[in-house]
Image (tube, rainbow, N blue to C red; front, top):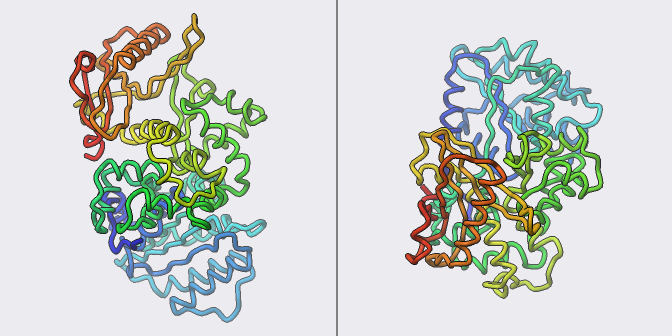
Length: 479
């Protein structure tokens, strides 16, 4: 295991933060993103000792614990209080008095409040007090830069970014910190002494996603299989408990969200809102729509359009895209006593099926790289998956990725992960042709069609590969 000493990637986010710091006006920045994605690490590495004040909420802490964290933070910055504030209005008054002594004209005063949602315990009025602090004083201080972040993305969206209360339209900028790309994951591992090839890195990404905290649990002295055995399947391993922690951190009441995730984990081509409602035994009402939106904001699921009917929120498709959640329901939820499960399961049908589905998700996370490889990055596009049903046989068909282009062409993409060059068989070729035919018929598409393969390695040249107009390889996804 290793501890990164400097930040990897995050060039765009770093540049934005530095631009905001140099703006010369009061700034209120909301940074949000999935648990373990590196929000705190980013702020600490960008600003470090430039922080004038920093405090962190206590995960699962009560009102007393949160107020104690605030008082302790003031004490660490040399501003001890004679008595603990009775409420958050008094607490922010104490913070204002401290900052008034720290602010120097022409110099940026940076305040960082981490795990902001933790402070908002029942009946605490924390969000109201924060809004009053900013509206009555903070917004009038051109030197002040307030940065807030939290893993409970749904809380951050409803109480801060899209607030209809005291913080309504007070956020000057928001930054959505997303997971690493494959390229950033490779940089992260190379910087810490890993000499893994891109197949191993991609398989790691399939299980962990580009989550820096998860990647930090890897050991360069072990093989990929040994790492997976230790991290996921060893007795008492931390990652066996991570799933529950992940959802309890993001949502106050996680069980309804987990129910949605579980049904999506077993429907690889995704589900409509009505199908999800039926599967979990709930009504397809506003409450379900809100939960689906929250899961999208948390980067757990994605929503894409369908060409089967008129495009709308109701008949669009929701699909699980969080790599760790997909891995959890495939291999961890039911548990196993085999502490060498991964090593003992290599090349089994279960692992091969998971690899195929996971590679499709990886491709969906790297659309820009795919467009670059196809040299269509300058063309306006819409991308989505597609599923249809053969009206005669009743069999279902799915196309992994459709890239519909403004030049009236469409790339019909099939993703195949393999450990060597992929040889397109007659059966696979005919299956792809049937899917293309069904797509054209059921969507009434009238433009040109470009059959496209996304594979680990180049296609083996044979009678069927000649009919594939474009090929994107794994190396292209790392660019």
